[in-house]
Each structure stands twice: as structure tokens, then as C-alpha cells.
Length: 79
Length: 156
Image (cartoon, rainbow over all chains, first blue to last red):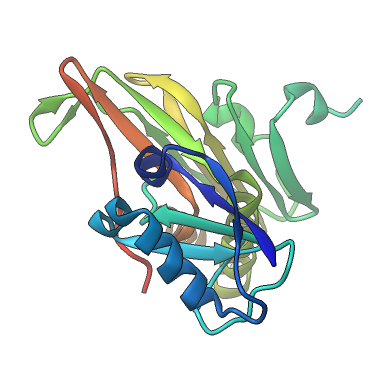
């Protein structure tokens, strides 16, 4: 199952990319997917991270599906 | 072509009770506030948030704002809808600028129109507080000798 993972601001700098295509096992939970991303890019763990699936904040329990849009970013600082 | 369309926002959500936009173009708080004035309203409260030169004693050269645009627009629209439910207001506009902003340039405008001023003041304060907590936009402060992505508070 292939999903795209988006990074913004500090997380894009840490990963060195703004978007990655990543394969996950079928029926992976969002929490497991995000944990795997942080394991792959350990510098992300230096930040307070927020996660989104298909442009909504994620709780972690959701199952992810082929073609989903995931996002990993730091606590927001607009305004 | 409508009045709004010639402003050429990068992305936007509009409804009869307001609009949310993200744009790289300069923001004019007065123009945004006056784009809609419902006939039953008697007050508009606006927030004009702009780039501060000194933060905790350190001088900023300029800022760069980045947004997760489609999600940011959705979150802005959710805030506007909630504000219209919880306060006695009619119309909400939320516009955020992205890209490079110089000192003194406006980064965010919130405009709330209401029949009476008190609800508009309260809603405007609530909206900016929530925007800074939940809308996926980030600022990078660039100094003479470095730069830093600012990280906010994690939403509860």
C-alpha cells in the first residue's frame, strides 16, 4: 500500500524533502505509519509533531488506505 | 468577474457568511473588512497582525510563512463556522499571507462583522487564538546571523 507523506517547515528541513511516497503494510494504523516515519527520520523526534490524514488531524487509531495523503509537521506557528 | 476574483487569491473558501483565503499578495485590512458588510451589522472588529521587528530582544530581518494550504483553509473555515455558532456575529473573514514578509507587513487579517460590537471583539480574539493553535501554517524567523522555524503550542 502506497501513500504520500507531506512535510512542511521544520519537518521538511529535517527529512530533506517536502513529499515522499512510502509503502506500508495493508491495514497499517496511522499511529504505526507515523512511528515508522519517525524511526526512519530520527531527527523528527527533536520536535513536537502533529500528524494529519487527508487534511484532517489524526488520532493514530485510524487505518490508512492506499492513496491517502499523510502529513507530518510541527506545532503550528501562524498568525 | 467579481470584485473578489480580481484580487487573485492563491486559494480560498467562500460562503455567504464569509471567506477564508491564503495568498502571497499584500493584505489590506480595511479592504478585507469592507468586502462584505451585512445590512443588519453595526460594527466590524478587525485584527491586523504584522511582522514584528524585535522578538524577545532579538532583531528579525524578515519572516517566511508556509502553509499546508488545503488543510489550513479547511481549519480556517471550521473556526469561522464555530465562531458563527458561538458568538452573536454575522460575517467572518480570515486571510493569511504566505511567502516572504518584511518588517511591518501584514501576515494575517481577521474581520468579524456583528450587529453589536461586543460579540465581534470576543469572536475576533477567539479566532486568532484558535488560528495560532490549530491552522497548519508556520513562520520562519530570519535573522542577520541565522534562521529558525518557530514551533507553537501543541493543540490539546
